[in-house]
Length: 240
Image (tube, rainbow, N blue to C red; front, side, top):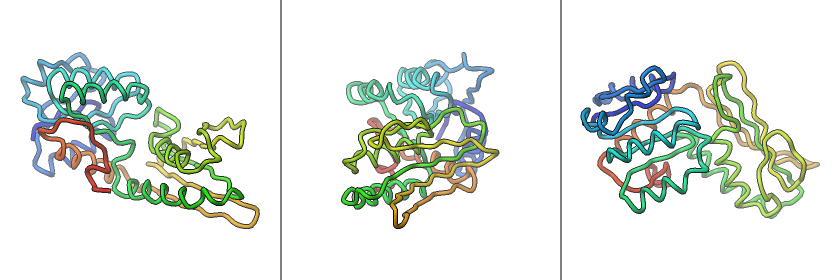
C-alpha cells in the first residue's frame, strides 16, 4: 500500500516506522517546509492509496479537500477542526469520498471510551455524584482540551441529564461538565474521569506509555481504508 504522510512531526515519524515494518511504502511526505507539494496531481502521480493526516486544526480541512480531489481516502487524527465535520460527511455521502477520523487511535483508549459510556449511563441515576475530567498531555500539544477529552465529555453529557454541556477550565455552572487540561513535560496522554460525592469517589483512568500504540492504530486504520469510501471511525474498525 502506498501511503502519503501529511504531517511529519513525532507522530508522523512513528507512523512511518510502523508502516514500513508492516510492508507499506511511504510514497509522499508533506511537512511545513514542502506544504505546497500537497496537490491532487502529486497524490495521483505517486499512486497514493491512503493519506494519513496529522497536522493542525487550521490546515486539516484544506488537506482533506486536496485528498478528496484526488479520490484518496484520508485517515486523520488531527483534532480541533470538528466545526467542519458536517462538510466532510457531506463529501463522503454525496461524492463517495473516504474518511476515517478518531480523536484517539489507541485500542486501550477506545475500550476506555466504551467503559466511560457505560459508567455514565449508570451514574445518571445518582445525582449526589458530580463528574469531572482531567487530561494531561505533553507541552507540545497544540489544542486543549484534547480530542480524546472532548469525546469522553460528549459521551458523558449525552448520558447524564444533569450535565448540559462541557466547559474547559473556567466553570460557571453545575450543569457544565468540568474539563481541566494540563500540559506537562513529555506526557503522551493521561485521561481521568472522577465521580465525587460526600461519601466516596469513583475514578477511571487511562494512561498512555508511548506513541507506539497510537501509531499502530493509525496504520491499521489506513489498511482498513484502502479502496474504501464512506465515513468511518474506531468503532467500525474494532467492532465496538
